[in-house]
Image 1 (cartoon, helix red, strand yellow):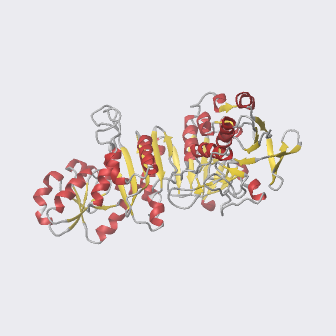
Image 2 (cartoon, one colour):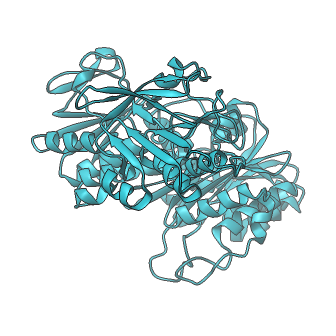
Image 3 (tube, helix red, strand yellow):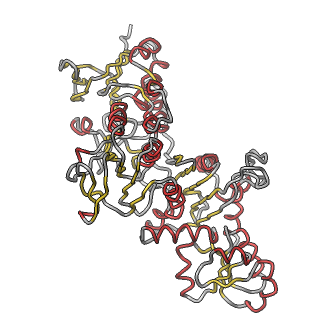
Length: 549
Protein backbone atom coordinates (compact mmCIF):
# COMPACT_ATOMS: atom_id res chain seq x y z
CA UNK A 1 0.00 0.00 0.00
CA UNK A 2 1.31 3.43 -0.97
CA UNK A 3 2.09 5.61 2.03
CA UNK A 4 0.18 8.91 2.27
CA UNK A 5 1.83 11.91 0.65
CA UNK A 6 2.84 14.93 2.74
CA UNK A 7 2.11 18.44 1.52
CA UNK A 8 3.57 21.42 3.36
CA UNK A 9 2.15 24.90 2.80
CA UNK A 10 4.05 27.93 4.07
CA UNK A 11 1.69 30.84 4.67
CA UNK A 12 -2.06 30.93 5.09
CA UNK A 13 -4.76 33.47 4.20
CA UNK A 14 -6.07 33.45 0.60
CA UNK A 15 -3.43 31.58 -1.36
CA UNK A 16 -2.25 29.11 1.26
CA UNK A 17 -5.66 28.17 2.59
CA UNK A 18 -7.15 27.78 -0.89
CA UNK A 19 -4.34 25.37 -1.68
CA UNK A 20 -4.77 23.41 1.56
CA UNK A 21 -8.54 23.00 1.41
CA UNK A 22 -8.50 22.11 -2.29
CA UNK A 23 -5.80 19.50 -1.69
CA UNK A 24 -7.93 17.93 1.02
CA UNK A 25 -10.93 17.73 -1.30
CA UNK A 26 -8.76 15.97 -3.87
CA UNK A 27 -6.78 13.72 -1.53
CA UNK A 28 -8.41 12.48 1.68
CA UNK A 29 -5.38 10.42 2.69
CA UNK A 30 -2.71 13.10 2.42
CA UNK A 31 -0.98 14.68 5.39
CA UNK A 32 -1.41 18.45 4.91
CA UNK A 33 0.57 20.82 7.12
CA UNK A 34 0.06 24.59 7.07
CA UNK A 35 2.72 26.80 8.67
CA UNK A 36 1.76 30.37 9.54
CA UNK A 37 4.18 32.80 11.18
CA UNK A 38 1.41 35.07 12.46
CA UNK A 39 -1.40 34.61 14.96
CA UNK A 40 -4.16 34.05 12.39
CA UNK A 41 -4.11 31.67 9.46
CA UNK A 42 -7.35 32.73 7.78
CA UNK A 43 -8.63 36.28 8.05
CA UNK A 44 -10.30 38.87 5.82
CA UNK A 45 -7.38 41.19 5.18
CA UNK A 46 -9.41 43.24 2.70
CA UNK A 47 -11.79 44.09 5.53
CA UNK A 48 -9.15 45.45 7.91
CA UNK A 49 -9.49 49.16 6.97
CA UNK A 50 -13.24 48.97 7.50
CA UNK A 51 -12.90 47.76 11.08
CA UNK A 52 -10.48 50.63 11.68
CA UNK A 53 -13.30 52.98 10.69
CA UNK A 54 -16.02 51.10 12.55
CA UNK A 55 -17.90 50.18 9.37
CA UNK A 56 -17.31 46.53 10.23
CA UNK A 57 -18.11 46.53 13.93
CA UNK A 58 -17.37 42.93 14.88
CA UNK A 59 -13.64 42.22 14.97
CA UNK A 60 -14.21 38.49 15.21
CA UNK A 61 -16.09 38.49 11.90
CA UNK A 62 -12.73 39.16 10.20
CA UNK A 63 -11.33 35.86 11.47
CA UNK A 64 -12.70 33.40 8.94
CA UNK A 65 -11.22 30.13 10.20
CA UNK A 66 -9.11 28.95 13.13
CA UNK A 67 -6.66 26.05 13.38
CA UNK A 68 -9.33 24.14 15.32
CA UNK A 69 -12.09 24.70 12.76
CA UNK A 70 -9.79 23.84 9.86
CA UNK A 71 -8.69 20.73 11.68
CA UNK A 72 -12.25 19.65 12.37
CA UNK A 73 -13.59 20.19 8.86
CA UNK A 74 -10.57 19.47 6.65
CA UNK A 75 -8.23 17.47 8.90
CA UNK A 76 -5.50 20.03 8.35
CA UNK A 77 -2.50 20.30 10.65
CA UNK A 78 -2.40 24.09 11.02
CA UNK A 79 0.41 25.56 13.08
CA UNK A 80 0.30 29.29 13.84
CA UNK A 81 3.23 31.19 15.33
CA UNK A 82 5.42 28.76 13.41
CA UNK A 83 8.08 30.02 11.02
CA UNK A 84 9.68 28.16 8.14
CA UNK A 85 13.40 28.83 8.61
CA UNK A 86 15.03 26.98 5.71
CA UNK A 87 14.29 24.65 2.82
CA UNK A 88 16.58 21.72 1.97
CA UNK A 89 15.60 21.02 -1.63
CA UNK A 90 17.82 17.95 -1.98
CA UNK A 91 16.37 16.28 1.10
CA UNK A 92 12.90 17.76 0.47
CA UNK A 93 12.59 19.02 4.03
CA UNK A 94 11.61 22.27 5.70
CA UNK A 95 13.19 23.40 8.95
CA UNK A 96 10.53 25.08 11.09
CA UNK A 97 10.67 26.98 14.37
CA UNK A 98 7.95 27.35 16.99
CA UNK A 99 8.03 31.09 17.74
CA UNK A 100 6.55 30.55 21.20
CA UNK A 101 8.93 27.88 22.47
CA UNK A 102 11.86 28.30 20.08
CA UNK A 103 11.82 24.56 19.33
CA UNK A 104 12.85 23.51 15.82
CA UNK A 105 12.06 20.45 13.75
CA UNK A 106 12.51 19.24 10.20
CA UNK A 107 9.44 18.25 8.16
CA UNK A 108 9.73 16.15 5.02
CA UNK A 109 7.48 16.97 2.06
CA UNK A 110 6.40 15.44 -1.21
CA UNK A 111 5.26 18.84 -2.46
CA UNK A 112 5.86 22.26 -0.96
CA UNK A 113 3.74 25.36 -1.56
CA UNK A 114 5.01 28.85 -0.77
CA UNK A 115 2.40 31.48 0.03
CA UNK A 116 4.40 34.02 2.06
CA UNK A 117 2.67 37.12 0.71
CA UNK A 118 4.10 40.62 0.56
CA UNK A 119 4.85 42.92 3.48
CA UNK A 120 4.29 46.69 3.64
CA UNK A 121 7.30 48.67 2.49
CA UNK A 122 9.07 50.83 5.05
CA UNK A 123 10.82 53.59 3.15
CA UNK A 124 14.34 54.54 4.34
CA UNK A 125 13.59 57.89 5.98
CA UNK A 126 14.35 59.24 9.47
CA UNK A 127 11.73 58.18 11.99
CA UNK A 128 10.20 55.48 9.81
CA UNK A 129 9.88 53.29 12.90
CA UNK A 130 7.20 55.71 14.14
CA UNK A 131 4.97 54.83 11.19
CA UNK A 132 2.26 52.17 11.36
CA UNK A 133 1.52 49.66 8.61
CA UNK A 134 -1.51 47.49 7.90
CA UNK A 135 -1.06 43.87 6.90
CA UNK A 136 -2.78 41.70 9.49
CA UNK A 137 -5.09 41.70 12.51
CA UNK A 138 -2.31 42.73 14.90
CA UNK A 139 -1.43 45.75 12.72
CA UNK A 140 -5.10 46.73 12.66
CA UNK A 141 -5.32 46.55 16.45
CA UNK A 142 -2.24 48.76 16.79
CA UNK A 143 -3.66 51.41 14.45
CA UNK A 144 -6.99 51.44 16.29
CA UNK A 145 -5.23 51.83 19.64
CA UNK A 146 -3.06 54.67 18.34
CA UNK A 147 -6.07 56.41 16.77
CA UNK A 148 -7.77 56.64 20.17
CA UNK A 149 -5.49 59.50 21.21
CA UNK A 150 -4.87 61.03 17.78
CA UNK A 151 -6.45 64.06 16.15
CA UNK A 152 -4.38 64.52 13.01
CA UNK A 153 -3.36 61.57 10.78
CA UNK A 154 -1.04 61.45 7.80
CA UNK A 155 -1.43 58.52 5.40
CA UNK A 156 1.59 58.04 3.16
CA UNK A 157 0.48 56.54 -0.14
CA UNK A 158 -2.65 57.03 -2.25
CA UNK A 159 -3.11 53.49 -3.49
CA UNK A 160 -6.13 51.32 -2.73
CA UNK A 161 -5.26 50.56 0.91
CA UNK A 162 -4.06 54.08 1.59
CA UNK A 163 -7.32 55.61 0.39
CA UNK A 164 -9.43 53.02 2.22
CA UNK A 165 -7.58 53.90 5.40
CA UNK A 166 -7.94 57.63 4.75
CA UNK A 167 -11.70 57.27 4.37
CA UNK A 168 -12.08 55.11 7.45
CA UNK A 169 -9.93 57.34 9.61
CA UNK A 170 -12.20 60.21 8.55
CA UNK A 171 -15.14 58.06 9.68
CA UNK A 172 -13.50 58.04 13.10
CA UNK A 173 -13.64 61.84 13.09
CA UNK A 174 -9.91 62.40 12.59
CA UNK A 175 -8.28 65.03 10.41
CA UNK A 176 -6.59 63.18 7.55
CA UNK A 177 -3.93 64.19 5.05
CA UNK A 178 -2.67 61.91 2.28
CA UNK A 179 0.88 62.32 0.95
CA UNK A 180 1.63 60.75 -2.43
CA UNK A 181 4.76 60.97 -4.59
CA UNK A 182 2.80 60.50 -7.81
CA UNK A 183 0.87 63.47 -9.20
CA UNK A 184 -2.38 61.53 -8.77
CA UNK A 185 -4.18 59.03 -6.58
CA UNK A 186 -4.63 55.40 -7.69
CA UNK A 187 -1.87 54.43 -10.14
CA UNK A 188 -4.09 51.96 -12.11
CA UNK A 189 -6.12 54.95 -13.36
CA UNK A 190 -5.13 57.68 -15.77
CA UNK A 191 -4.75 61.24 -14.52
CA UNK A 192 -8.10 62.64 -15.67
CA UNK A 193 -10.01 59.67 -14.26
CA UNK A 194 -8.15 59.66 -10.94
CA UNK A 195 -8.98 63.36 -10.58
CA UNK A 196 -12.64 62.48 -10.05
CA UNK A 197 -11.67 60.33 -7.06
CA UNK A 198 -9.37 63.05 -5.75
CA UNK A 199 -12.21 65.56 -5.86
CA UNK A 200 -14.44 63.23 -3.83
CA UNK A 201 -11.69 62.86 -1.22
CA UNK A 202 -11.25 66.62 -0.95
CA UNK A 203 -15.01 67.14 -0.73
CA UNK A 204 -15.03 64.86 2.32
CA UNK A 205 -12.28 66.67 4.17
CA UNK A 206 -9.22 64.67 3.12
CA UNK A 207 -6.20 66.84 2.35
CA UNK A 208 -4.23 65.65 -0.67
CA UNK A 209 -0.55 66.43 -1.11
CA UNK A 210 0.19 64.98 -4.54
CA UNK A 211 3.60 64.95 -6.17
CA UNK A 212 5.00 65.15 -2.65
CA UNK A 213 7.66 63.03 -0.96
CA UNK A 214 7.53 61.97 2.68
CA UNK A 215 11.05 62.71 3.97
CA UNK A 216 10.81 62.07 7.71
CA UNK A 217 8.54 61.30 10.66
CA UNK A 218 8.87 63.21 13.93
CA UNK A 219 6.88 62.91 17.17
CA UNK A 220 4.20 65.41 16.20
CA UNK A 221 4.71 66.08 12.49
CA UNK A 222 6.03 64.72 9.22
CA UNK A 223 8.69 66.28 7.00
CA UNK A 224 7.93 66.69 3.30
CA UNK A 225 10.02 67.21 0.16
CA UNK A 226 13.40 67.00 1.83
CA UNK A 227 12.58 69.41 4.63
CA UNK A 228 10.94 72.24 2.69
CA UNK A 229 7.71 71.93 4.68
CA UNK A 230 5.98 69.94 7.40
CA UNK A 231 2.53 68.64 8.32
CA UNK A 232 1.25 68.08 11.86
CA UNK A 233 0.68 64.40 12.61
CA UNK A 234 -0.23 62.50 15.77
CA UNK A 235 -0.41 59.24 13.79
CA UNK A 236 1.35 58.23 10.57
CA UNK A 237 0.30 55.21 8.51
CA UNK A 238 2.58 53.98 5.75
CA UNK A 239 0.93 52.55 2.65
CA UNK A 240 3.62 53.20 0.07
CA UNK A 241 3.86 49.77 -1.51
CA UNK A 242 4.90 46.24 -0.66
CA UNK A 243 7.88 43.96 -1.01
CA UNK A 244 7.66 40.20 -1.56
CA UNK A 245 8.39 37.93 1.38
CA UNK A 246 10.70 35.87 -0.81
CA UNK A 247 13.73 35.51 1.43
CA UNK A 248 13.06 31.83 2.09
CA UNK A 249 12.79 31.15 -1.64
CA UNK A 250 15.94 33.15 -2.36
CA UNK A 251 17.93 31.29 0.29
CA UNK A 252 16.74 28.01 -1.20
CA UNK A 253 18.10 29.03 -4.59
CA UNK A 254 14.74 29.38 -6.33
CA UNK A 255 14.53 31.70 -9.31
CA UNK A 256 13.42 35.28 -8.53
CA UNK A 257 12.88 38.18 -10.89
CA UNK A 258 14.81 41.45 -10.67
CA UNK A 259 12.37 42.82 -8.06
CA UNK A 260 12.64 39.77 -5.83
CA UNK A 261 9.34 38.12 -6.77
CA UNK A 262 9.20 34.34 -7.13
CA UNK A 263 9.13 33.18 -10.75
CA UNK A 264 6.60 30.44 -11.56
CA UNK A 265 5.39 28.75 -14.70
CA UNK A 266 1.79 28.54 -15.91
CA UNK A 267 1.12 25.77 -13.34
CA UNK A 268 2.49 27.81 -10.39
CA UNK A 269 5.62 25.64 -10.28
CA UNK A 270 8.88 27.32 -9.25
CA UNK A 271 12.30 26.51 -10.68
CA UNK A 272 12.18 23.43 -8.42
CA UNK A 273 9.51 21.03 -9.75
CA UNK A 274 8.55 19.93 -6.22
CA UNK A 275 7.94 23.51 -5.02
CA UNK A 276 5.00 25.69 -6.00
CA UNK A 277 4.26 29.31 -5.14
CA UNK A 278 1.08 31.42 -5.09
CA UNK A 279 -0.10 34.83 -3.92
CA UNK A 280 1.44 38.26 -3.60
CA UNK A 281 5.08 37.11 -3.59
CA UNK A 282 4.74 35.63 -7.09
CA UNK A 283 4.87 37.18 -10.56
CA UNK A 284 1.83 36.61 -12.75
CA UNK A 285 1.68 36.35 -16.51
CA UNK A 286 -0.24 39.41 -17.68
CA UNK A 287 -2.67 39.30 -20.60
CA UNK A 288 -0.62 42.09 -22.22
CA UNK A 289 2.98 42.76 -21.33
CA UNK A 290 5.66 41.07 -19.26
CA UNK A 291 5.01 39.03 -16.10
CA UNK A 292 4.61 41.22 -13.05
CA UNK A 293 3.14 41.13 -9.54
CA UNK A 294 -0.63 41.52 -9.22
CA UNK A 295 -1.73 41.90 -5.59
CA UNK A 296 -5.32 40.64 -5.71
CA UNK A 297 -7.06 38.21 -3.38
CA UNK A 298 -9.05 36.69 -6.22
CA UNK A 299 -5.90 35.69 -8.06
CA UNK A 300 -4.35 34.27 -4.89
CA UNK A 301 -7.41 32.08 -4.35
CA UNK A 302 -7.51 31.00 -7.96
CA UNK A 303 -3.83 30.16 -8.14
CA UNK A 304 -3.97 28.30 -4.83
CA UNK A 305 -6.67 26.07 -6.25
CA UNK A 306 -4.69 25.62 -9.46
CA UNK A 307 -1.51 24.61 -7.61
CA UNK A 308 -3.48 22.02 -5.62
CA UNK A 309 -4.92 20.61 -8.84
CA UNK A 310 -1.45 20.27 -10.38
CA UNK A 311 -0.05 18.61 -7.25
CA UNK A 312 -2.96 16.16 -7.24
CA UNK A 313 -2.40 15.22 -10.88
CA UNK A 314 -5.03 17.44 -12.52
CA UNK A 315 -2.79 19.96 -14.31
CA UNK A 316 -4.03 23.00 -16.17
CA UNK A 317 -2.52 26.38 -16.92
CA UNK A 318 -3.20 29.70 -15.24
CA UNK A 319 -5.17 32.23 -17.26
CA UNK A 320 -3.22 35.48 -17.82
CA UNK A 321 -4.07 38.11 -15.23
CA UNK A 322 -6.11 41.17 -16.19
CA UNK A 323 -5.66 43.06 -12.91
CA UNK A 324 -9.35 43.82 -12.37
CA UNK A 325 -9.84 45.98 -9.27
CA UNK A 326 -12.42 48.19 -7.54
CA UNK A 327 -12.49 50.65 -4.66
CA UNK A 328 -15.19 52.66 -2.92
CA UNK A 329 -14.30 56.17 -1.74
CA UNK A 330 -16.95 58.07 0.23
CA UNK A 331 -19.75 56.48 -1.78
CA UNK A 332 -17.95 56.83 -5.14
CA UNK A 333 -17.08 53.60 -6.94
CA UNK A 334 -13.92 53.42 -9.06
CA UNK A 335 -12.98 50.28 -10.99
CA UNK A 336 -10.32 49.41 -13.54
CA UNK A 337 -9.00 46.53 -15.62
CA UNK A 338 -5.92 46.08 -17.78
CA UNK A 339 -3.49 48.72 -19.00
CA UNK A 340 -3.62 52.50 -18.75
CA UNK A 341 -3.26 55.01 -21.57
CA UNK A 342 -0.21 56.39 -19.76
CA UNK A 343 1.61 53.06 -19.77
CA UNK A 344 0.81 52.26 -23.37
CA UNK A 345 1.83 55.67 -24.72
CA UNK A 346 5.10 55.39 -22.81
CA UNK A 347 5.66 52.11 -24.66
CA UNK A 348 4.91 53.75 -27.99
CA UNK A 349 1.85 51.60 -28.64
CA UNK A 350 -0.69 52.60 -31.29
CA UNK A 351 -3.95 52.95 -29.37
CA UNK A 352 -7.43 54.41 -29.55
CA UNK A 353 -8.85 56.05 -26.44
CA UNK A 354 -12.55 56.58 -25.74
CA UNK A 355 -14.16 58.61 -22.93
CA UNK A 356 -17.89 58.64 -22.28
CA UNK A 357 -19.99 60.10 -19.48
CA UNK A 358 -23.43 58.43 -19.54
CA UNK A 359 -25.82 58.08 -16.62
CA UNK A 360 -25.56 54.79 -14.77
CA UNK A 361 -29.18 53.95 -15.58
CA UNK A 362 -32.05 55.51 -17.50
CA UNK A 363 -31.99 59.25 -16.89
CA UNK A 364 -35.73 59.51 -16.40
CA UNK A 365 -35.66 56.99 -13.53
CA UNK A 366 -34.99 58.61 -10.11
CA UNK A 367 -31.45 58.47 -8.79
CA UNK A 368 -29.54 58.46 -12.06
CA UNK A 369 -25.96 59.70 -11.69
CA UNK A 370 -23.10 60.32 -14.06
CA UNK A 371 -20.76 57.45 -14.85
CA UNK A 372 -17.35 58.21 -16.35
CA UNK A 373 -15.96 55.48 -18.60
CA UNK A 374 -12.64 55.12 -20.40
CA UNK A 375 -11.70 52.43 -22.90
CA UNK A 376 -8.20 51.86 -24.29
CA UNK A 377 -8.01 49.84 -27.50
CA UNK A 378 -5.22 48.49 -29.70
CA UNK A 379 -5.51 50.61 -32.86
CA UNK A 380 -4.34 47.78 -35.10
CA UNK A 381 -6.21 44.75 -33.75
CA UNK A 382 -9.18 46.37 -31.94
CA UNK A 383 -8.25 44.32 -28.85
CA UNK A 384 -9.39 45.86 -25.57
CA UNK A 385 -6.26 46.73 -23.58
CA UNK A 386 -7.81 48.43 -20.56
CA UNK A 387 -10.81 50.23 -19.11
CA UNK A 388 -11.62 52.51 -16.20
CA UNK A 389 -14.98 53.48 -14.73
CA UNK A 390 -15.97 55.88 -11.97
CA UNK A 391 -19.46 56.39 -10.58
CA UNK A 392 -22.60 54.37 -9.96
CA UNK A 393 -22.42 50.93 -11.54
CA UNK A 394 -18.70 51.27 -12.31
CA UNK A 395 -17.93 47.76 -11.06
CA UNK A 396 -20.68 46.23 -13.23
CA UNK A 397 -19.32 47.80 -16.40
CA UNK A 398 -15.71 46.89 -15.64
CA UNK A 399 -16.74 43.31 -14.89
CA UNK A 400 -18.45 43.12 -18.29
CA UNK A 401 -15.39 44.54 -20.04
CA UNK A 402 -13.04 42.23 -18.13
CA UNK A 403 -15.15 39.29 -19.25
CA UNK A 404 -15.01 40.53 -22.83
CA UNK A 405 -11.22 40.81 -22.58
CA UNK A 406 -10.95 37.28 -21.19
CA UNK A 407 -13.08 36.03 -24.09
CA UNK A 408 -11.08 37.88 -26.72
CA UNK A 409 -14.07 40.03 -27.74
CA UNK A 410 -12.89 43.08 -29.72
CA UNK A 411 -13.91 46.59 -28.69
CA UNK A 412 -16.21 47.05 -31.68
CA UNK A 413 -18.23 44.00 -30.60
CA UNK A 414 -19.10 45.58 -27.23
CA UNK A 415 -21.95 47.22 -29.13
CA UNK A 416 -23.52 43.80 -29.70
CA UNK A 417 -23.45 42.52 -26.12
CA UNK A 418 -26.95 41.75 -24.86
CA UNK A 419 -26.99 43.14 -21.33
CA UNK A 420 -29.74 43.20 -18.74
CA UNK A 421 -31.92 46.30 -18.90
CA UNK A 422 -34.64 47.91 -16.85
CA UNK A 423 -34.77 51.66 -16.16
CA UNK A 424 -33.49 51.36 -12.59
CA UNK A 425 -30.51 49.20 -13.63
CA UNK A 426 -29.28 50.50 -16.96
CA UNK A 427 -30.24 51.90 -20.33
CA UNK A 428 -31.51 50.31 -23.50
CA UNK A 429 -28.12 51.24 -24.93
CA UNK A 430 -25.96 50.23 -21.99
CA UNK A 431 -22.85 52.35 -21.35
CA UNK A 432 -20.75 49.34 -22.37
CA UNK A 433 -22.66 49.12 -25.65
CA UNK A 434 -22.02 52.80 -26.24
CA UNK A 435 -18.27 52.26 -25.97
CA UNK A 436 -18.61 49.76 -28.80
CA UNK A 437 -20.57 52.24 -30.91
CA UNK A 438 -17.92 54.93 -30.43
CA UNK A 439 -15.15 52.49 -31.31
CA UNK A 440 -17.09 51.50 -34.43
CA UNK A 441 -17.27 55.17 -35.46
CA UNK A 442 -13.53 55.60 -34.99
CA UNK A 443 -12.77 52.48 -37.03
CA UNK A 444 -14.96 53.88 -39.80
CA UNK A 445 -12.88 57.04 -39.95
CA UNK A 446 -14.21 59.53 -37.40
CA UNK A 447 -11.35 61.59 -35.98
CA UNK A 448 -10.92 62.04 -32.25
CA UNK A 449 -8.70 64.35 -30.21
CA UNK A 450 -7.73 63.65 -26.60
CA UNK A 451 -7.90 66.31 -23.92
CA UNK A 452 -4.12 66.42 -23.57
CA UNK A 453 -3.68 66.83 -27.35
CA UNK A 454 -6.03 69.79 -27.72
CA UNK A 455 -3.63 72.67 -27.00
CA UNK A 456 -1.17 71.38 -29.58
CA UNK A 457 -3.92 71.05 -32.18
CA UNK A 458 -5.07 74.61 -31.50
CA UNK A 459 -1.48 75.82 -31.89
CA UNK A 460 -1.41 74.10 -35.29
CA UNK A 461 -4.36 76.18 -36.43
CA UNK A 462 -7.36 73.91 -35.77
CA UNK A 463 -10.49 75.87 -34.87
CA UNK A 464 -12.32 74.75 -31.73
CA UNK A 465 -16.10 75.05 -31.94
CA UNK A 466 -18.28 74.55 -28.87
CA UNK A 467 -21.67 73.17 -29.91
CA UNK A 468 -23.27 73.32 -26.45
CA UNK A 469 -26.01 75.76 -25.53
CA UNK A 470 -25.31 79.36 -24.60
CA UNK A 471 -26.19 78.58 -20.98
CA UNK A 472 -23.70 75.71 -20.78
CA UNK A 473 -21.01 77.79 -22.44
CA UNK A 474 -21.54 80.62 -19.97
CA UNK A 475 -20.81 78.25 -17.07
CA UNK A 476 -17.37 77.39 -18.45
CA UNK A 477 -15.66 77.07 -21.81
CA UNK A 478 -12.32 75.94 -23.20
CA UNK A 479 -10.02 78.89 -23.92
CA UNK A 480 -9.91 79.71 -27.62
CA UNK A 481 -13.23 78.06 -28.43
CA UNK A 482 -16.02 79.73 -30.38
CA UNK A 483 -19.67 79.03 -29.68
CA UNK A 484 -21.93 77.73 -32.45
CA UNK A 485 -24.74 75.70 -30.92
CA UNK A 486 -25.54 72.36 -32.48
CA UNK A 487 -28.98 73.53 -33.58
CA UNK A 488 -27.37 76.47 -35.44
CA UNK A 489 -24.41 74.58 -36.85
CA UNK A 490 -26.02 73.64 -40.16
CA UNK A 491 -26.47 77.33 -40.97
CA UNK A 492 -22.70 77.89 -40.53
CA UNK A 493 -21.44 74.67 -42.13
CA UNK A 494 -20.87 76.04 -45.63
CA UNK A 495 -18.48 78.76 -44.46
CA UNK A 496 -16.45 76.14 -42.59
CA UNK A 497 -15.89 74.08 -45.75
CA UNK A 498 -12.21 73.25 -46.24
CA UNK A 499 -11.23 74.19 -42.69
CA UNK A 500 -9.80 72.04 -39.88
CA UNK A 501 -12.24 72.02 -37.00
CA UNK A 502 -12.45 70.34 -33.59
CA UNK A 503 -15.95 70.20 -32.14
CA UNK A 504 -16.69 69.90 -28.45
CA UNK A 505 -19.78 69.50 -26.31
CA UNK A 506 -20.32 68.43 -22.71
CA UNK A 507 -19.43 64.72 -22.99
CA UNK A 508 -18.82 64.03 -26.70
CA UNK A 509 -22.23 62.80 -27.87
CA UNK A 510 -23.37 66.05 -29.48
CA UNK A 511 -19.84 66.46 -30.76
CA UNK A 512 -20.27 63.23 -32.72
CA UNK A 513 -23.47 64.57 -34.27
CA UNK A 514 -21.74 67.84 -35.14
CA UNK A 515 -18.74 66.05 -36.64
CA UNK A 516 -20.99 63.84 -38.77
CA UNK A 517 -22.76 66.95 -40.10
CA UNK A 518 -19.64 68.97 -40.88
CA UNK A 519 -17.85 66.06 -42.54
CA UNK A 520 -20.59 65.98 -45.17
CA UNK A 521 -19.91 69.66 -45.92
CA UNK A 522 -16.26 69.00 -46.71
CA UNK A 523 -14.90 70.03 -43.33
CA UNK A 524 -11.90 68.21 -41.85
CA UNK A 525 -13.36 67.64 -38.42
CA UNK A 526 -12.44 65.87 -35.18
CA UNK A 527 -14.46 65.37 -32.01
CA UNK A 528 -12.94 66.23 -28.64
CA UNK A 529 -13.15 62.85 -26.92
CA UNK A 530 -15.23 63.02 -23.75
CA UNK A 531 -15.98 66.68 -24.40
CA UNK A 532 -15.65 69.51 -21.94
CA UNK A 533 -16.13 67.13 -18.98
CA UNK A 534 -13.00 65.11 -19.72
CA UNK A 535 -10.98 68.19 -20.71
CA UNK A 536 -11.87 69.94 -17.46
CA UNK A 537 -10.95 66.92 -15.33
CA UNK A 538 -7.60 66.49 -17.05
CA UNK A 539 -6.56 70.14 -17.05
CA UNK A 540 -7.72 70.60 -13.46
CA UNK A 541 -5.58 67.64 -12.40
CA UNK A 542 -2.59 69.11 -14.21
CA UNK A 543 -3.09 72.46 -12.51
CA UNK A 544 -3.10 70.82 -9.07
CA UNK A 545 -0.10 68.54 -9.68
CA UNK A 546 1.64 69.37 -12.99
CA UNK A 547 3.01 66.40 -14.90
CA UNK A 548 3.77 65.53 -18.49
CA UNK A 549 1.15 63.28 -20.09
